[in-house]
Length: 152
Image 1 (cartoon, rainbow, N blue to C red):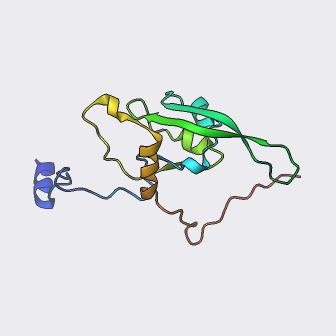
Image 2 (cartoon, one colour; image 1 turned 90 degrees about the horizontal axis):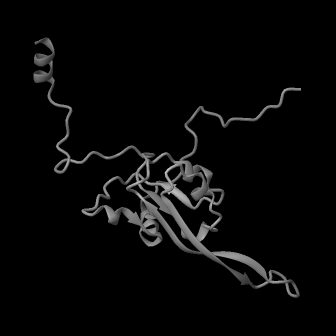
Image 3 (cartoon, rainbow, N blue to C red; image 1 turned 180 degrees about the horizontal axis):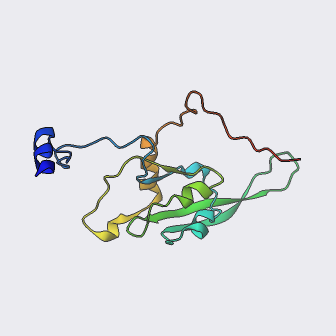
């Protein structure tokens, strides 16, 4: 009875979602965005994903040498990069393991689809999410970066 009266006087904490939208926190885990130019098709994100929801296909091609008289370089080209959000559990391992900073978290969370097959997002759609990636902020005032100290 006491709880009911207290709730009646303070008001509701519930938000009527479709009509009223709350802003997510700046570093919320929403959709994973792809920066296609940074991806080298190294497959680290695919191998580390516990749900196997990332699909990558690529091919190798010969790039011109960096110096005159040098031999051509082998480079990887990204043909397909898909994430199946019906399988993804948003653990963030793919974002952490990427050595080339090609994957980023976005705070966007509204990407539901009427068909489950439409939750397979391709590289074009993942690239569009890059516009919503927040800028990296420096450390808070008074905090220090961790330093690796080796005991002697």
